[in-house]
Image (cartoon, rainbow, N blue to C red; front, side, top):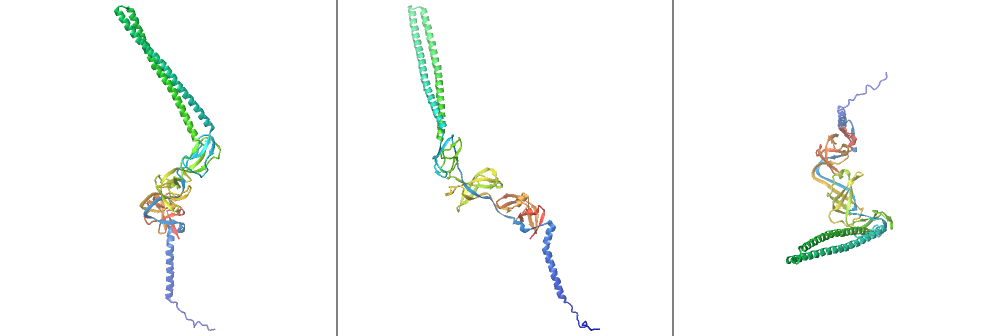
Length: 422
C-alpha cells in the first residue's frame, strides 16, 4: 500500500475564548434588535396600525398669556361718501369732472325741468289770485260791518227819541194837557225802539262773526297756496345740485346734457376728511367682534390706534365686513383703497392653558385630541375654550407638558390609539 500523510497530520483545537466572544456579540446584537423593534411591536399591538411622525404636527400644552386678536388686511375707505340724485326729471348739466376737488356748497350740476318751472309759475299765479280774494273779502266785510253798525246806531237814536217823547207825554198828562192814550202810545213806541235796537245789536254780532269766518277762510286758502309755492321753490332750488361736504368728486353716473328721470343717480362725493379702514373677518371670529373694541392700524411705516365703528350684519363668502375708525387725529397722506394691516384685540388673559391651534379642532369638533405617550397617540376627551389666530384654550382633559397632535390626526381614522413610527 502507498503510504499517506495521515500519520503526519495533527488536530489543532479551537480556542474557547474566541467562541465566547462571538457568542457574546451575537447576543448583544439580538438584544439591540429587540430593543429597537420593541416600541414598534408595542405600537402595532396597541393600535393595530402605525403612522409616520413626518405626516403629523405636534405641539406641547403650555400655560401662559393668551391673546385673542384678529389680524387681517384692510383698505382705506371714506366714512361718508354720499350719492347725489336728480330731484326731478330733466336734462343734466355737469359743472365738474371725476376727481375734481370740491368745497361744501359748490355747484356740481344743474337739472333743467321745464315742467317744474311751469308748475311753479301756475301756483304763484294762483297764490296771487287768492291774495286778491282775501283783500276783497276784507273790504266787503268792512263795508257790511259799517252798514250794520249804522243800523245799530240809528236804533239807539230811536230809543233815545222814544224815551224823550214818553217823558214829555207823561209831563203833559200830569199837567192835564194830554190824554192817557198818548202816554200809552209813547210807551209802546219806546218798547218797539228798544226791540229794534236789540235786533240791530244781535245782527251786528252774528254778522261780524260770519264775516270774520269768511275772511279767515280766504286767508287760510291763500296761506296754503303760499306753502305750495314755497315747496315748489324749494324743488326748483334743488335743481341746482350742490356738494354736501368738502371732498372730491368720485364717480359720474350720467353724461353731459343727458335726460334723466327723477331720483336717478348723478354722481358721488367722497369726504376725504373722514376715512376709515374696512377689513374682512372670518365668520367664526365675527361673533366675538363688537363695536368699540380697540384695534391697531399699521401702514406707511407707522402705527395708529383705532376702534371698531361698524360691523356688517351680512355674511358674504363666509366673511363679515367690519370698519375701524382712527382714534384721534386723522392721519395725513392716506388714499382711498390704500392697503393697511389691521389688528383687533378681542381678549387678553395672563395665565391660560393652551395649545397651538390646528386642524384637530375642526376634525374632532373640539371634543377630543390625540396625546402622544410612549410613542402611541391616545385619543383623549378634551374641552376647548376660546380661540385665537394661532392658539386654543384648554378647559379640561389636558395638562401642561402633554404633547398633542395638532394636525394630521385625520390619518388616525378616529381610532382610540395609534402607533407612531419614524
